[in-house]
Image (cartoon, rainbow, N blue to C red; front, side, top):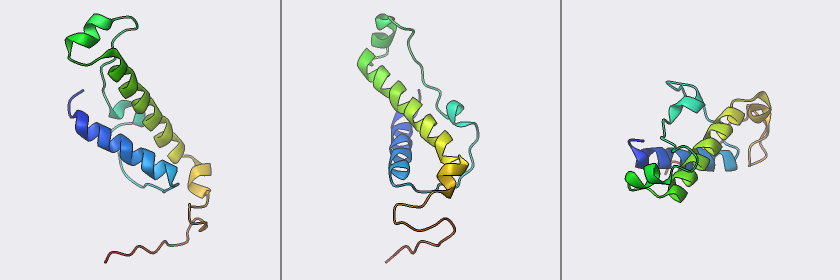
Amino acid sequence: MERKDEVRRFITLIDELYEHKVKLLCTMEAPPHRLFLHDRAPPGDIADAGSRGVSRGEREDEAFAFDRAVSRLMEMQSKEYLEAQTHAGEADGDAQKVNTT
């Protein structure tokens, strides 16, 4: 996976938006499950994981974070998520005021 730092920051952003029930509107070049092309070693292939300087545990953590982000992005597209109230208790369609000063 190239650009690992950017991918980690994006996953963290998705986690935060999801936790705070933020409605994210964006376009994607691919469906969520194809956004991150990460290289998973086949089960039990410790040698392959170690050959890239990444431990098996780190690879499993990255795979878990990727799967979680994909799941959250899919849920964030659902009608139920989009119609749900925000964390501030405002109904869908109510504008949220943001202080930019």
